[in-house]
Length: 336
Image 1 (cartoon, rainbow, N blue to C red):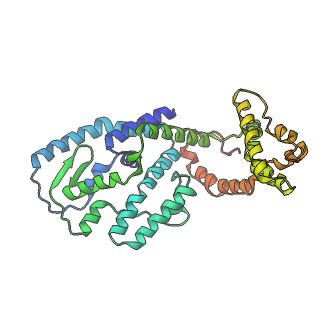
Image 2 (image 1 turned 180 degrees about the vertical axis):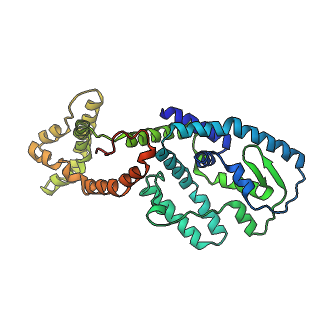
């Protein structure tokens, strides 16, 4: 199902001309044409009247034959929680452009808001999939764009023009839209890689919506394989505190780690790094000492507390709000 979602998003992206526009408009059934015509009109020259009428009729057909069916299918196969998360993600990517336009327009308050929103949503909001900046801090996004910036510096509307798919605009706003697209990070990302990443994100969202289960046996196996390598600095410092030569121990640790990693990559079931260190008299550590030094509880710090708090403060309320619309959510309890 997730690959179908990715394909739908790809089609929407191609239709809208930019991934950001596609992701933001698809959840609203691509009402961009209605919104354009609902805005207050101004007197603008229309030297391309004949061409504009052709483009208007073309857009009308494209909207009802392609864009609207794609949007409806996307809405049908994607839970509302996932759609909101994707919209938040793409909206967050456009924050640098909004920040730049606030600065260019001399709107310090707006620039400060966009900077805070981007930092909060990119970290606490998990790359922007959530919007704690709005929900928790009351930081509403600005609506600044390059077209408004050009107007601030005295550029007039120019003439009226209707673009394929994008719809009605003016010469100034068309230039502004092109500039806004260039400030979007997705422009500089390989499109195929971007949709592979998107597919992975949708898989994650689907798993969370369906009830996330952590397998203790898998976690224990991964810890057994990788924790000895992660703890080498701790072991090294402990051995040095007992009088060992740090430089010599560092070289020995490097050799033991390379040998143990090579053995593991060759398919050996057990990781023998700790055995190698225990057998090396230069470290002066017993097997029991090493087991104690590589105890997982020494490395997790406040992670369990922070995860529990994040689930309670952010995940649980989000699932509670979206439960009735999230068909895939079979079990109301998030199992971790």
